[in-house]
Every structure is written in C-alpha cells, then in structure tokens.
Amino acid sequence: MQTSVPDLAHTHARPVHWLATATAMAGVVALAGLLQPGPAGATAAPAPRPAPDAATAHYPLECAGAPSTVAQRATGDLDGDGNPETVAVVHCEAGSGTPPSGIYVLTHGKGAGTPAARVVATLVEPSQLKNVSGFAVRDGAVRATLLGYSSPDVPSCCPDQSETVTWRWKGGAFVRTTQGEPRAA
Image 1 (spheres, rainbow, N blue to C red):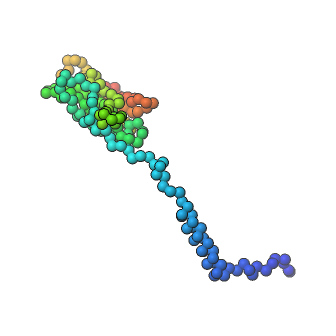
Image 2: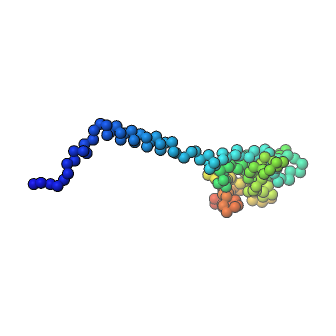
Image 3: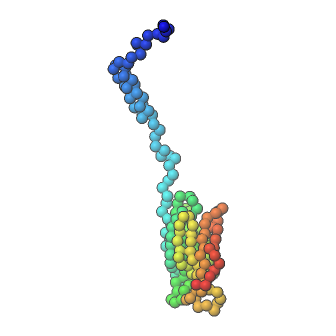
C-alpha cells in the first residue's frame, strides 16, 4: 500500500535548530522584562497620618475654672478613610468625688493656626452624669461601659447603674447601640 504522504525528513530538528529557538526565547523574555510597567507611585495611597494627640484638643467642658483631664484615650480608624481618629474620655479635675465624663472623637485640625486635634463628635455629654469604664476602640467601633445613677440621692462616688454601649460610624454620624438594658451596678 502506498501513501501520498510526503517525506518528512526535513522535520528532524538538529542541535543548531534547538540553539536558535532557545536564543529567540531568551530574547523575548528579556524584552518582556524591559517593557514592564513602572511602579504605580502616583496612584499609591499616601501613608496614614498619626492619630491626633488628645492633649492638644480643646474640649467643650465647663469646669468652673478648674482644668480638664484626659482620663483615657484610644485610637482607630472609625470612618474608614485610612487615617486613625482618637477617642478621648475627658472630665473636669475635682478635689474629691467622681466628676462626670464626656467622650469625644478627635481628628486633625484644618489649616494653620488651628489646634493639632479638634473635636468632631461628642458621644457622651458630661451633663448626662456618666462615668466611663471598660473603654476601647476596636474594629472601627467605640465601646464603653457607662456608669450612672438611678436617682439624685445616689452619692456621686458610687454609681449604681451600668450599661454597655457601642458607637459605629454610619451614614455620616455615630450611631449608638446598647447591649441590654441599664442594670444595677
């Protein structure tokens, strides 16, 4: 039986053919390495700023001439912009007793001549007569245990109510959620 298939003797590769193919491939790889895009320097996000310093902020407290004290502070990115905010628990200094606290969210001041940190939100007003315990900033939320009083007859040294609260940034404001009803401390 005869076939009409042509002689394929010319398809046998010789060492010179392999050498030429390897040289061509090396050239293509080298050229591809030279034509890679440069680093994305212009599109890289800027490094986050350090958290605002709670000691440099002016707090909306009425202390009747007494200084205020930053009792606790914590930092974290609360609004998802990549820069940390500072949350400060602040109260007026008192010679005795337990002065009520305020909880304030701080960000960096804008422009020259402004404080390094500025209050952008008040989570707890001192007029609410609350003390703060168990305070933390985690996972984009502020968590605290607020201690309060069931009546004006309870001494300020000894709060008799406790509630655990969380604030989370949603829709341009801090939204407060409470875990359970206030309970006796």
